[in-house]
Image (cartoon, rainbow, N blue to C red):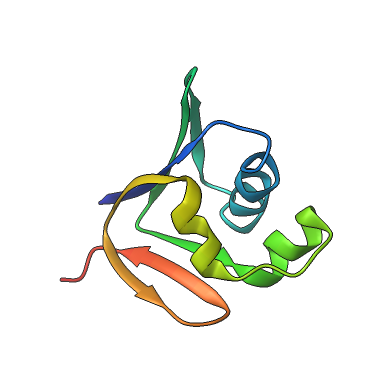
Length: 89
């Protein structure tokens, strides 16, 4: 089993984003550090624009993740509605 992850800056802007990612990925393991939050998920992670918008209470463009993104691990597949991380075989 491979693990993928995303690491975001720890700030008020990312709290609802992190909550949305955890909601969409029930097996997520969240590691909160003073300056960042790392979210590990076995096999694959999905980040849904719609879920983030529900948590933020406003429209959200997935490109906005770039503002607070520190790093990620896995093969990235992205469209207007979802961002998926997985290791391709």
